[in-house]
Image 1 (cartoon, one colour):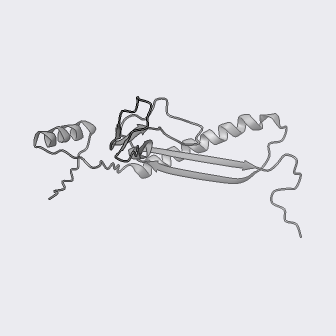
Image 2 (cartoon, rainbow, N blue to C red):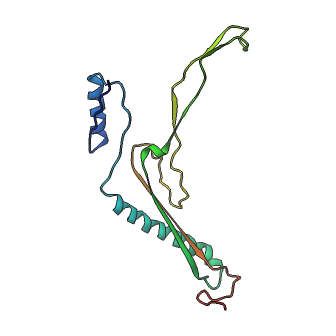
Length: 165
């Protein structure tokens, strides 16, 4: 029989205290952690504004070589909420359980046995101009926003608002 228990805690220290208490009570398997924030919409708006400012600053620097600044023809934005589990990758090192006699250890039998899943920190994978100054090694929700501003080619002399017939 399996019993499931779901806890809601406000801080990481509270979560660690709950885990320690669970282990003291004989719990041997913790399945997952879920993260939530009531501030996600506000954080997404704040990060989006920062991404727009970063894109404009980058464009200002890159377009400084032109006498006339090209016109904006398109703007694309992508804002994503990344939960802590997306910063880690888990894989199984699969070796079937079998005995092999032909190996490099002088014909002594080698038994390949089950191995546990391997988990490693792969980090924040995003194409943003502003990156965190430290690795996100704590269980935190990350909000990432990318803004791309597309400009008319300086070689194209066609006015942006004109239409051809």
